[in-house]
Image 1 (cartoon, helix red, strand yellow):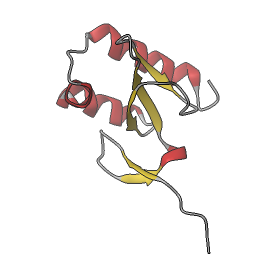
Image 2 (cartoon, rainbow, N blue to C red; image 1 turned 120 degrees about the vertical axis):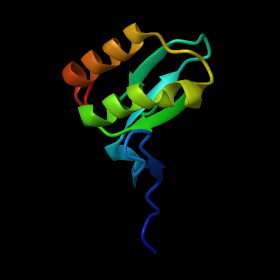
Image 3 (tube, helix red, strand yellow; image 1 turned 90 degrees about the vertical axis):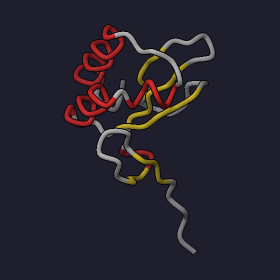
Image 4 (cartoon, rainbow, N blue to C red; image 1 turned 45 degrees about the horizontal axis):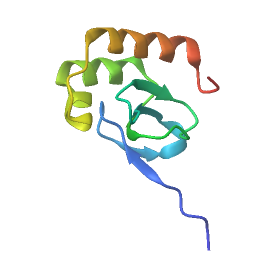
Length: 91
């Protein structure tokens, strides 16, 4: 029997994709928002594709605010964009 591949939905494009292909955005217990490329950080997670278009959609639709039930400042989105550009999937 083949191993089950966990699927997660991207907040931007709303497509179900394998968990390993997506980037996890995590809200730590202290309330800090960051990208988790390895899926190991503790906290509440939401997933997005590694494409900048998905991050733009999430920003416009305020999807992270709904997912984490807290207001997200613009600086956080800018930081996520920089992490996405510079971090790659190994960061």
